[in-house]
Length: 203
Image (cartoon, rainbow, N blue to C red; front, side, top):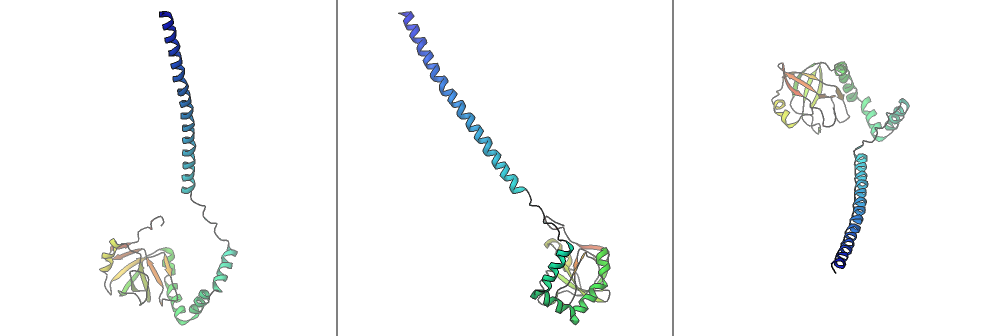
């Protein structure tokens, strides 16, 4: 009886063991499949992020012939015709003559002695904060791309103040009767009162 009982118990145990082992193997296979799926999905997500963060290549610069073609195309447009007409007007010629006076200083980024003549810009201007100043016997709009933290010192400027200005950018438009000097560095009485901050994500 004992032997029979023992053999029964052993057979029961072996059955139990086989029942325990089979699900474990299935679970291992399932775990393997799940891990494999996780790896694949993670790879796809990572690859997708790589694609999103990769910058698109910058466009190739235009060739000389392409630039000429674009210029001619613009000159034939209504805006181009209006601009050419302004350039040949007395106002346009005066603006060009004034711009030529400080062209070398702009190219060399050297100090220009300026006297403030007006603390406001011409009516209808959309250039932000700026003043009118006389440089080398000609009148200019001096424009400041200033942050709020820089305005306090600029607001202290007065008419007839003598300042030193440096700029790399000189522009003009039919809307304005004066060349526009974009100030990057300004001194008053030997003290720096303005220095243009680099743009976010740029120079």
